[in-house]
Image 1 (cartoon, helix red, strand yellow):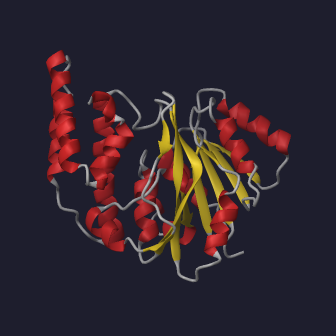
Image 2 (cartoon, rainbow, N blue to C red):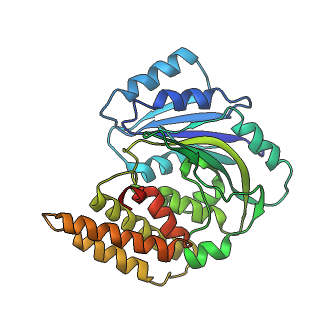
Length: 308
């Protein structure tokens, strides 16, 4: 049918969280047409947990793909896209979980609009290992929006993490090689591809939970790693905008900031003075660029408030 949705759960060493995710996906009041679970060559016992769950539920729509070698996030997404036959796909991180009414809510709104919708996005609650709770994206207001200009000229628009997005499959199929080339932050490319010549349907309700536990790509206290990944995400953004929109993003001063800081973090030894410098540096970035969505998201992803 025209609004059928496939769920794709990508897992890598998330044995502590995968069962919550699987249970929430399988317990939808309006079910997914198909559920694909990809284990990306995990080294923990998450694969055995997934197999046990599938055996116990005996759901014909469930399919397990076990990668013999690690393909990374983009590789898993690209592999699943080639197997999907529904118009929409919901990529779900294995450490997140959903409310039971995700699909019923999404289909209700999809049936109300005749426009070409490239993506449905909804708010996510936050469950932090330090018991910090809140709403991940507070600016999503229910309705149709067009973010083509923001995507082309800035490389971003208000959007939740991967689990808070349901994509139109034919929008993504055009850019499988680009998606496949990203080891992390693949939703950067997905978000840009989805919005091209399409509207975005925002839902203000929090329909899932984004879990922060220290193993997320950006939820780290290792500043060198965080900055390196932030640079990767920014370069991936520029590459995606160039390929999808044939537009070259200008180098912003923020990129020079991150490159400079990345060079600083290559020092073999760090001192208390350097730690103090980093705190002041990020505080200045926050106060001068707090209205810039890219910087605000980087700060949120890296949980840099720990350093302020």
